[in-house]
Image (cartoon, rainbow, N blue to C red; front, side):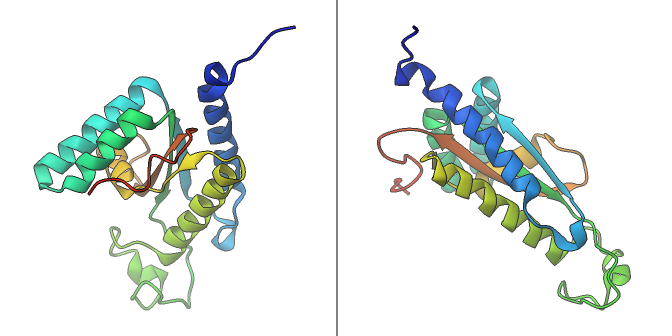
Length: 180
């Protein structure tokens, strides 16, 4: 019989939950059943590269939140889940929730997000973090990690919005009560 010690298995457990989070995001409901999501899990050196990019953005833009989050992710994350969406309309004749009369008109403005894409992304991210919470995995949704992932071209070119979710399993969630 093998003895599996928690401290030796913690990282593997966090990564397994990250995989479950991707499934939850993939199966979350989507407008017209159209799936525009891309997802990935970062570990080890890829987390370090993400944190470096977060810090670089913070320094270039003089925005300390990126630097704070970079240090936080680098020090604590065993995995980072990335969930992003392409900006692609659903071809609706009647909607105008994006501010344009219809999807055909909105298509002339490819950088303007479709509300269904962003809504679907939000539902998928919510489903993913619900899985993390159900497994008592520390997490926080970070736009800073998502912005860095965009700069790193982790997903295909059509993905324009990404949220990052660092994960850990500690005695206190390190992603809250942070110094500003």
